[in-house]
Image (cartoon, rainbow, N blue to C red):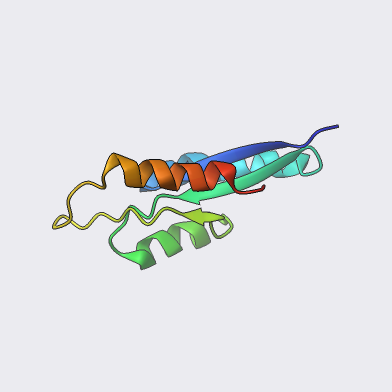
Length: 93
């Protein structure tokens, strides 16, 4: 049987709240489902994200896109986001 991979993307608090119970439920199928967590890196304060991972008992992310939320920084160019997406999707899981 082929193992399926579920890729969960988290960034803001509501994402963490939705992914946590799903992650725990899918853990029961670890032989059939591999789970990967992608963090957008949206929060300017890294400790805030760390608290979400710890409090909701989520593993450290497999990928961190490092987008950030610095209001002084402009929106990342599409080419940059596309390359980040490609690196996540093509990395051997």
